[in-house]
Length: 282
Image (cartoon, rainbow, N blue to C red):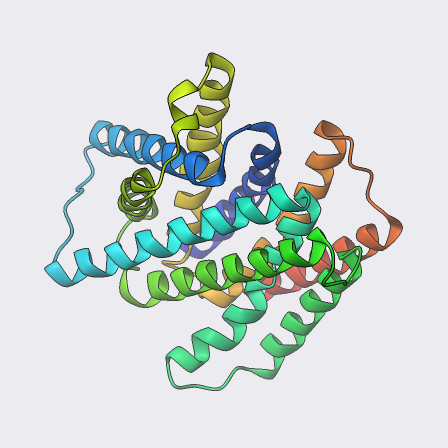
């Protein structure tokens, strides 16, 4: 199996795990800044141990790379906080749907970053994804929590898209788990500055949920995703990962008993079609 095929497999596996991430915003009864800070530090520690066991090089090559990684950590932290906040004030469906405006952002951001114009095929796929997301959105009204959740989710999407483009263009030489270790650590340290007193009274069950979130739904999928950017374009990775809202909808149905509407199912089918097409093209 060549490196591009391995990257595609890792990308699809990361999407399966990412789909369950939003559930923890409802399952963990803590403010989003607390969840983000603890989650990030646990994920960073886990990745550090794995890198040491595998005897992988951890140090970065240049001071410039450390500076870029610092920016990446800030972007990652903002992405996590706003994504979870979007879900807490609305629902899992609204949060994950609004987050998946980021493929559209990436389709236009990456070519502009390089001084190029987006390809017509990318615009078509991106438009198809946007249409699928539109079908899945339950209601557009500025007087309810759905709209506020969408706005925070879209901001989270922009942070994630920008992080992916920077990763692809400046840090692609590093392993995905190495990049994720640094970014999680930075996001966690910054988050600790703003952490609330609620984090001091975490019980055993909440602690277990945080560990599961940090290791199996954060460190592993983010490492796979970041690693795939070494061999796939950020826009391709973004469109393929649009399977996540579908997985998230299934998880929410099974665990939180959120029954999707028919238009949610249709929108998910449109998104899956776009992701399949982009996988084939990649």
